[in-house]
Image (cartoon, rainbow, N blue to C red; front, side, top):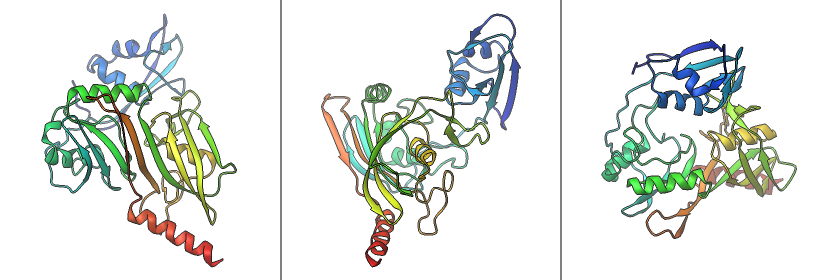
Length: 309
């Protein structure tokens, strides 16, 4: 398979009978595997007539298909001594409380020094589980989002957890601080998400994107801010950040979908709750995580300002 050295964009105008998008592209991109093409479509790098497409979507005569091909890199997935807090570990899984600033796995801009590198040093038995480049990983958190993640240590656990995610059986809870106060004490954001057509490194609410639902509840009002309890029904890239920005109340400190803050070096979002069915026993297990110090300090400062008024 060809190794791409830079991002490329290819455009096709369909002719003739309709065909599935993944088959349409595989007939025109002989140097790329079917699985690679399927991944590009699923990850939002392919559009039909300007709308994000799905692998099984039909391409009809006259359709304009645009495919962006990001570069393929080889990354170092060797063990590295990086401090991480292991909340729980047994022969099947490890639950980690990821700090902000740590990417989950190697990628553009962070070829090593990731959670995967750290876990390979602490839990060498995850090597190769579920794949070479993202061993054990079944779900992710943004680099600057802190909190709980479960990692598989066996193929059985990887398959079980991946299945639970697909069936939306894993329970993921977050705490987030918004800029501005939502008009309702609780609600659901139910709008589709896809890659931003104008800024391909960002996500956005896009007609025809993947269904995405975020439930929120206001826990505390703090001088024009709201501390929210958030539950994800789906798990799209940047979902909470995009949904809150769509409402008009972006996360505190979010420089991508809102505005950076001099009081916090990252966005205020912490995965504080995680629950799932244990891959071996089948019993429900759950874990909690306290807010990191830097987020507690932001709340303390806001509460003090509110008390002084």
